[in-house]
Length: 205
Image (cartoon, rainbow, N blue to C red; front, side, top):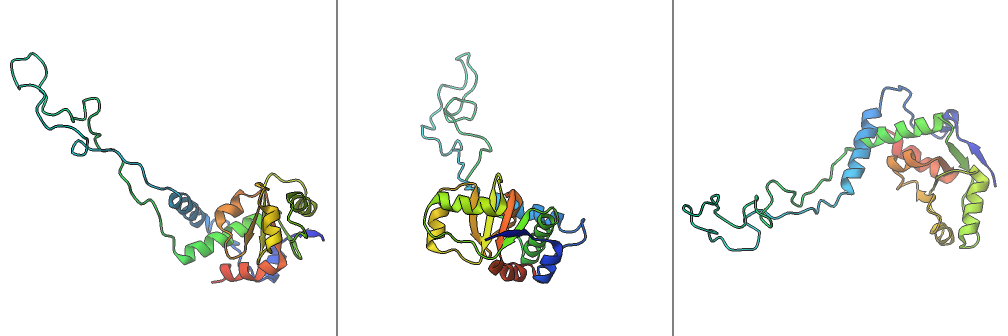
């Protein structure tokens, strides 16, 4: 089993839509990555206002004659244990990105990664035993030493998934699920030939 560098010409033969204008698609990539990051936020931060803090609404002391500053409630924001002014409340940070922007961003990133020679292609990717050592050895044989590798195939068998479970720097992902953020973060990208048609479909207009 061997892997070869996937070139721009190879991508065109595989009908993968490329972005030849260098200035086009940058904003789409930015918008999509920001959306991915925003969608991972739980938005669970929560503080209590003065109306929600537990305690009495009784005036701590009378208005005049004590020599102390006026105080109307122990739940005032300027008191220790009081409410919080304009504090965070649970909210939804998720962002929506339309299909055309997603398609453009994917095409842009694929074009950039292919142009820099970071994408390799091979016939198939599978191991015969569910051992991490076998999986790492296979990927290293195909791409060489790399900080992180993204392995894309149309599908993986159960044995291969089990073998890949403990190799954090080598991520197996199907062509239907791979996203722009993963493509940007990987040092090397290894694509099985059976995944090219799906990637072409995802970038087609």
